Structures are given as structure tokens and as C-alpha cells.
Length: 312
Length: 81
Image (cartoon, rainbow over all chains, first blue to last red; front, side, top):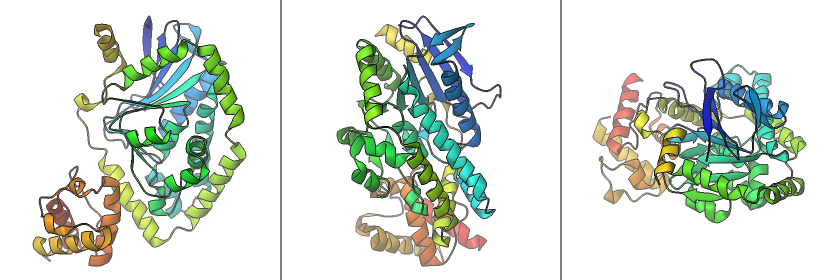
């Protein structure tokens, strides 16, 4: 059980999109929460990307540690979650895509996609050290949101969660490792179909397919992650050895991932009118999700869940 | 084109392009009850635009809109044209 937990916004801005909270105990867990900001689309904006990048870099530069109350504490588990009541993440910043395409600023579009890749790769390879990463999905994960969830060592989802790759609707495809990440879990042919079939997959369906590692009831995600960590930590040395083995057997090929980014930008240069119109409609829909959602509908904060754990 | 005419056109699109049995639906039917996810509304709107030759630039739809909600949104956009 944790002794203390400190929540710190990753940036000093009041509009910080990410908070970091370290649960200290025998096992230290770094919780990264994508914050629900009123009036802001819950997607991978440049700001959120920059904040995730800073966290991943900080952990890497401190050799797997996190600054905590004046000293460095080793991070054993890192959990990515969202406090938005409906979305884990809506994925790429389509408005930014459209602006780049309209202005034919292919360098900016490439830069965005490469930035996403570098962050995902950094997060996905954190576990080559002594950290196990977990994605907790408590809602809908679309496009880049789905990729972000797949890039963790373990994916835990609440039963109402849904996942989809909508990029094909506007003539593109996942560019932040979607194919590589899915292939490691379901094989390359099935991964290709899943990135092009426009389907919305339910969490139970993905559990059956082996994409999701654990399913839990709606509203019980944080407790499920804590239970998962407690069980995982009991034989941690052996599990870490197997984790490293998995990464050696099926490593993420950065060159391949980079090639996908290059081809994605090339595809974006040649989108037709109908594809751009589909992108516009998706932007309209992303924008409509900005409407404020009452706090009561958000997943419970970590400390509230701690209290529930103590009661049970 | 009034709301009734838009609804009739919408039913045609639902039947022809999404293979939905329109005999059991009416203006109050919500899109999720027809198995249409919010994400797939994009497909539906593209088809409507193609059929009606009118762009829908302002949606402002409630969550899980009814067909009447959609018809009103389409009607608003047609007036703007």
C-alpha cells in the first residue's frame, strides 16, 4: 500500500494537459493522467505531446527514477490513463493535420508525426530498463489513442471501452506504430485488417483476441491496475526478465516506424477532395467533444480510489 | 425541402448505403439504436451531402442524435446555402 502520493502538473501552465503522480511504497508507481481541460479537444495536441515527451525524457535521463520530495525514487511501474469520462484519447490533432495540408507545410506535418513516433518509441522502450508500463483505458481510444494504449507492456481496459482506427476514413493510416504494435499482439495480417476495417472494437472483443491483457468493470479501472501491479510485483524479477526477452524477440524496429511516417506524409500529400471532406467532418466531431462534461462523470481520481480500497 | 422531405431522403440513404431496414424507424429513432456509431456518422453525412448536393458545415448535434435531430441540422445547413 502506498505511503504517500504527490500529484504534480507536468508543466507550470494552469492549462497543463498531463499530471504525474508517484505512489511511493515497496513498489513505486508513476501515474500519468491526461487531464480533461474544458474547451480543449482531448487529442494529442502539440502541448500534450510536449508534456509526455518531457516525462519520458525525465525518467530516461534519471535512469528510471522520478524526483520525489528532494530525492530520486526508482519507478517500477508507469501507468498512462485519462481523466476524461468518455475518451482515453481521440488520437491525432486533425485540425493541425488539415492546417498543414492546406498550407502544404509537409515539413510541419512530418515533424508532428515524427514527434508522435519518438514519444511512443520512448514510452514503449522504457521497459527495456526496470520499468513496466501499463495503459488504463476507461473510455474510447481512437487512432493515436489506440496506438498509445498498445505501446504499453500491458493494456487494461474497463468493459465499456471501445477502440478503433478511423484514419482510413480520410485516406490515411495509423502512423505511430499501429501496425507494428498490433502485429506483436495479433500477427501482421490481422493487424492490417484491423487498421483498415473501420470497425469499432469493444474491450471484451479485444480481450478475446489477445489485444487487451485484462478487463475490469466500469469505474474499477484504477483498482484493477493496483491489483494487477500487486500480483505482478510478487515475481517481479522473473517477469522483468521475460519482459526484456519479449522486447528482444519482438523489438520495435525504429527504421520501419520511420518509414511508415514518411509514407504517411506522402499519402497526406495526395488526399482527394472526398478524403479531405471526411477529415473535415471528423474535425467537426472532434470539436464538438470540447463541450464541458460534468466532473461527476469523470473516472474517480486516484486518491478517491485509494479510499475505496481501504474500505473494501 | 421541409423536415419530412429530408427525413424521407435520409431514410433512403440509410437503406441504400447502410442497409438499414427503414420500416421500423421514425424521426425519434436514435442513431445508436440503428447500430450507427458517432464515428460512422461521418459516412452517413458524406452520403447525405452527395445525395442532396449540400454541404453540412455546422452540426451541433446532441449525443446519440435522433433522425429528427439530423434532419434539423441538415435543414439548418440548407437554409445557410
